[in-house]
Image (cartoon, rainbow, N blue to C red; front, side):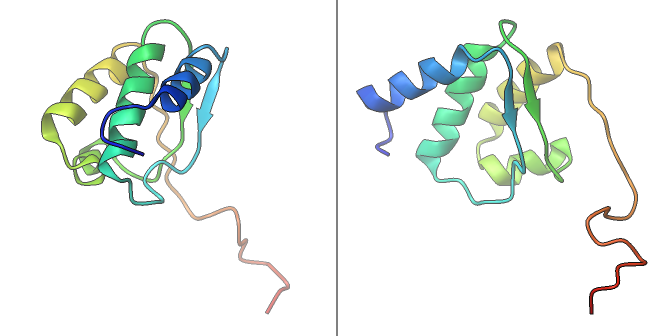
Length: 104
């Protein structure tokens, strides 16, 4: 993806911006390229105060600075996300591998 959105990227972002609800799972699991960071910010900006977005991440907000590598962008992104946001923090053991799992 080039640094500036191509026509196909813009169409995709516009389509995603119109979904009634967008669920983004495992934010921070993969390393993002600068153009992906730009696209993510643009998408969040398009959805801001218009449509609900559910973001699942193991990262605390403070870790987003390392993920996105651009402090001004993260400041603006978190400002938008937290403005109409409900944060649910879940602490505890993973439910994927219970202690009584019979697998070796």
